[in-house]
Image (cartoon, rainbow over all chains, first blue to last red; front, side, top):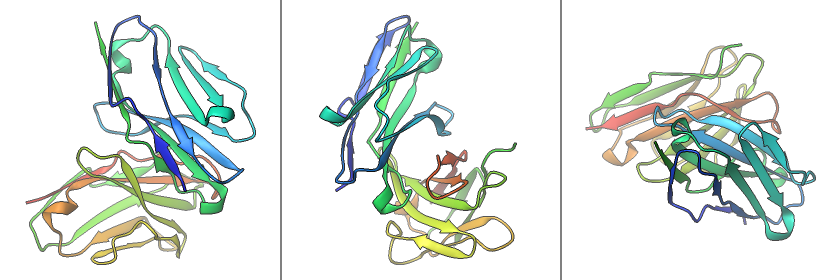
Length: 115
Length: 113
């Protein structure tokens, strides 16, 4: 069964703090993709990253970094030196080759960054 | 390269009316997906279409909802006889193939009075 769990409903931090958003997934497929999307207060969904199940290399993009660990079925997202503009809802998502390309989303984590 | 376009951005309907939501995929993309975000809930898959074909409609409600992606023109999500529970944000996404990243449009916020 496909399932994505984002246990943190809401996180509040002060600007410049580092913050990690957790994502745990369940899948029986060996080929799958993991994603993070950002939904700012304006409401659109912004693509951040996609990883496939065969690539466990961690990735860094500016202040963003992602840690993919198949052993714990986790795909965590860290924002370094957070900024107010990072305030948004962040969604982790999974797609499995067996089920086509449809995305299964976690419930989302609301991140509030205070100045 | 224009992104995914959705219109209208906001739609108000009275109970029993029909709602038509439109989605134009990114240029070069022939795969379209519809998702629904109910208030205080996450995003749920509804339907996956390619040109003139419904590939996966496992997330579509059994009644009142339909989707199409004609050879020419945008994809349409149609909701007949809307009820208050249909009030939600409806997002369209597109991808170049069935395995590539989905890029989302800005969404249509449907409010049923």
